[in-house]
Length: 427
RNA sequence: GGAGAGGUGGCUGAGUGGUCGAAAGCGGCUUCCUGCUAAGAAGUUGUACGGUCAAAAGCUGUACCGAGGGUUCGAAUCCCUCCCUCUCCGCCA
Image 1 (cartoon, rainbow, N blue to C red):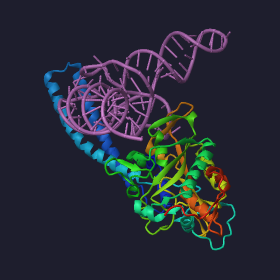
Image 2: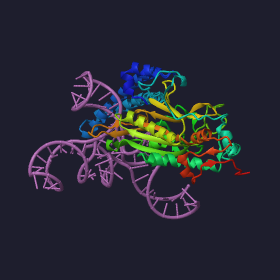
Image 3: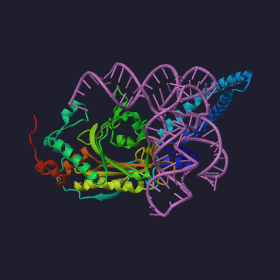
Image 4: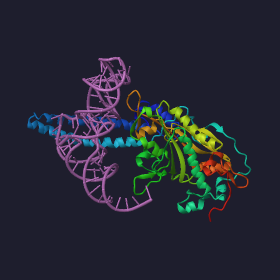
């Protein structure tokens, strides 16, 4: 969330930056509410001070009885009045907090203006787009190869759930290992967190309270299925003060991800691109404000490296102010080439959140010079989404005879196999 | 799931109604002493929000002893509810 002090002191600036998101956000109600809250707070404190004074005079025990009796009465009535004020104060505080939690981060200066994805800016492209005559979709290739079973996925769960069979399951697992091994080799400490998290976690990383319907929630427990490893991993250090010497902290994590995809009706209904459950490797960094910019660039490069190892053509896109995520102040999307769709599709999103998540989650560090604890910066990015990587491999590595060549780096993870051939693997 | 014990400051741990934001020790920081190290001496040592201030420092107000309510002029301390941790039993990969 945003710093309330910043909102107070530079309301015009904040308002102008929020307007760049084209989301109809305004802090005016917050400013107004804040004024009322502070008044109530001051009144409550004054009454409290008086009550403290009164109880203080009981300590000495030197006042005459009648006087004590009068004070007792005064304290009682002060308490009554205070209770009234308190009700207002608590309500205002909650309302204020709720509002603050619903205001998105301010886009960074270098984020281009724009209303939607059309305003995004291509930063770079990598690789050669393969020339494939009549490229087939990954779901066609994969079904023929016996590695996707879409019907049975639906039977077991519901639509947007898919079963991976045979080489599909193996490649998925190989990709996880390749990615985790690569990142772990660059200093990211591997984490395998809980897949169910409590509500505080989702508020901490900004999924809630704004996007309540997007996540799976358990009926009998106050727990949610994680929509991304970002949630448990970022919350690892929630409400902690870390030593600056420990920063930056780098983590990589595999988790399955669960998203209800509310509002995505009709989008990517075929294939393995948009599932309710999918696997992803996530990179998460905790940094000082001074190094966050640089660490964000490095993290994005680390994600790109995976695509380059797999020899998948991709581009890097800088999201514009209207397309950037709720918590992000700056975000690069990595988009991989899908031959059959004849376009790039998102496969990784690398965001710098500044201190936005840190404020929500209480992530602080103590500066080396021993000063007061400060909010740290959080950065994360997919490194990469596994399912989409599998789909991209199928499309980019497809051969005329229906087989798929295995990318070289993956071969050692798959017992040396070089090609996946069509085969009957199950009834 | 059942029974018991317990949740206090960075840590250990005292504290059963006012003198407690909280003893003591450890750790941290500052200074002194010391050829260096070790040892020693003195002082200092949380967080949040507000006021004062150009700002910082400083000063000052309020809150915070797991969370939320209650009793009381006054609660770390008494009462209620919840959460969490530990031990034993049960169950289980």
